[in-house]
Length: 490
Image (spheres, one colour):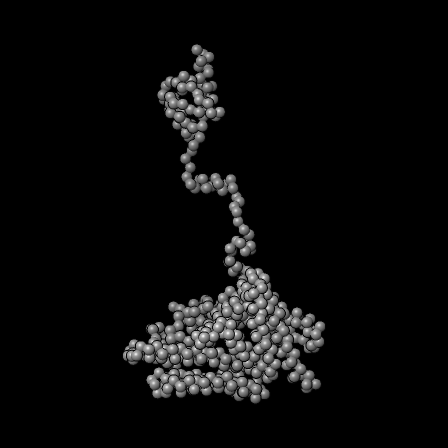
């Protein structure tokens, strides 16, 4: 009897150790080796309360109820690795490099702080803004570039009053086209003649004045086209709109506090055209997208960037072939950095500052040109205002006249080459066509890169053309300018 009582707990303990899960009292359970055990009533005490208690105890020991949070914590404790790419790998899909951009800005500021302090301590303040303003007011004719910019208002008024006469039918479309032809031609010829004849005009002043007139030429050309399209739509409808609907008051035009919808000819106001002249766009619209308010913190950041951009100006003197190659390679990196700094200063800081000040809503001044895999993609995305103007007022009209795509693209490059040469040769007062040939060389380069190079190879080719191509043109112009103005005097 004692032996039997001693054997029961031992077998019961072995049964608990070998069972996979709890079974009802009196049922069968599988052992670890898969065999079946005899009835529980023969091996264990027959009292049902003992069996139920052991089942509950086994359930608590072998299968605890866990929440999903507890399970995830256990998984995290057991595993710390997942299948993933490094952030700088292209396969990772990571694209947030804002910290690297901030690092570049910090490095630029710190790397040029020493040069700024050295020049300040060595030379002092060389340009006094108050003195500059006083000298201009005392003798404005000694500042021909600002005077040229002021005179440009004459061409703006000529365009506005020509459109007003066309809107009421006082003059015909043929007469209006002739007046625009005279106005726009004079707009390009008058400042260039002034720059070439005045000896007091410096190259920097000439570039500034001609740049303003070139921008104004493109703006007034767009102004002419859009108003002509509005007249064509009005004639197609064959009805005259009432003044209350089509010609709102001045307070409802572009640039005002009340942004009501403007219809033609209600846009032909002084406020409207001057808003367009100062807006950071080359394409005219009757109703520009407007931001709800001026963000002062954003405005101050862009203003700070505009006045803290460093500059570098490398120099050279001789021009034999070996020295030319050495100087060109030495010039490539600083010239490229200047170009990148200018891009950020003009297309991001300055244009966003003007857009925020004028509450101009369309802030797409550039796209991801740094990812360009073809030359055509670069020229279509690095300067969006010019690209939109060329596409809207030049490329599409040529295509609508039946020309093929290659002819239209070549015509666009021709116009771009002309204005590049116009902005360089006239202020320097010499005609070498380096800028024109540089722009036209983009056509065969675009064909070669688009046909034979793709992906990273195409992107590398675009970067090489930017880093090497610009210093070649700069080197040519500076050499010729030095020979004409300095070596001839000696």
